[in-house]
Length: 219
Ligand code: G6P
Ligand code: MG
Image (tube, protein in one colour):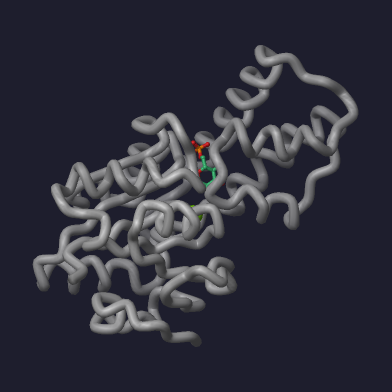
């Protein structure tokens, strides 16, 4: 029986794709590295340093660890500046209703995200105090597809992994949820994931009874 829902943040609660894209684009332009929206798609759910490695794989130059660290820091400074524009208006359709319905049914809610900017983003969109637990990039060693972030969210909630369903927009996140022994709902681009237990284009199409039973439905 499902007793908790773990939400990924970027791409599920709020769309930060464009800001990540703009920040990485500035860095790659400065470094003369080819970068486009298709490459940006591959960064979904991937940690900051692993994202940088994907970007640098399009360059011939060999970067030292300290150069990489500085590039990641520069990208994050640009990204955080852009995040200042984020507000409750950027919460994706259907999320607020879903959170209210889950609370009404006594289902626990948590965030499970690779992002180290999770506290800042939740604050910007006004949801900093709405979740029963938050597991994020600051509290884990291994990023998705490792199961660590979702197992930590379940531990914070005091529930077993098999009682959890994860909502994700990235293949790495669906893999992480399955590796944790949880049900996985793929939304947006993750609606194509073969191993998602339920697939949806959009949260606003979600039927809460279906979510809690996690029947396979496709839209
Ligand atoms: C999320 C995003 C990724 C991002 C990662 C780390 O998973 O989907 O695109 O790289 O978080 O984000 P951060 O805010 O820590 O740089
Ligand atoms: Mg995501």
